[in-house]
Length: 212
Image (cartoon, rainbow, N blue to C red; front, side, top):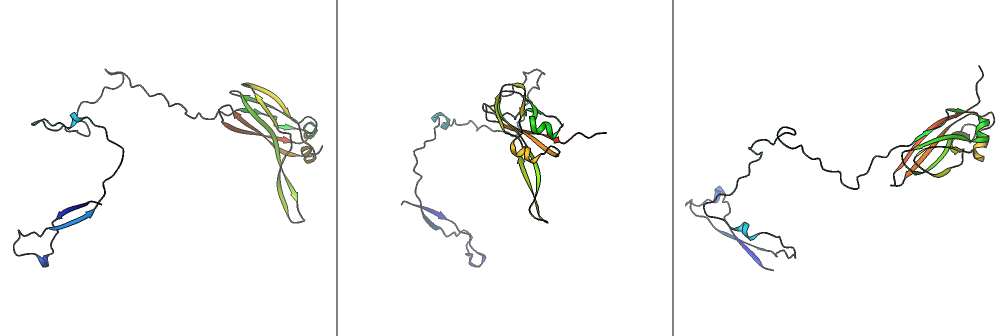
């Protein structure tokens, strides 16, 4: 390891100041060091190292003191905004889901729920309906369960509107009887070709019609 020696002039305390103020005691300091070894070489132009005698170095003023640039439309061209970089993630465009606000238990048990899906572009969808029921565990304890009361339909749909029906499942018919009442949530999960995933929901009341 090579050694690098520095000659220091340490500060002297007032208690040990010499009589002669010009006396300075040099104290050598030797440290061990190893030069950085790397294959990287900083590229430079040798002409930048040439200094012409009598030529001062350029001075950079911050902020600049020169005239302000021309405003757009006042003697100068309008600035060109840079184009967005490739691969920018677009905001997910939500599809539209239409469903009846209310259907009868008889219609739900026999035909299911009829919905209309509107897509801004072709995508793969999954549509189904769920409801929440309370189950009694004992005389004093109950719990809340989430049940899927229709079959899950998975389809590849083109751009535009498509009407389809999601039939009721066996669990749905057991949950909603002919005189039953339930508030169902129809969920539409849409996955577009570029990987975007959007989910929208609608609420449907399953109950008999009230007579006035």
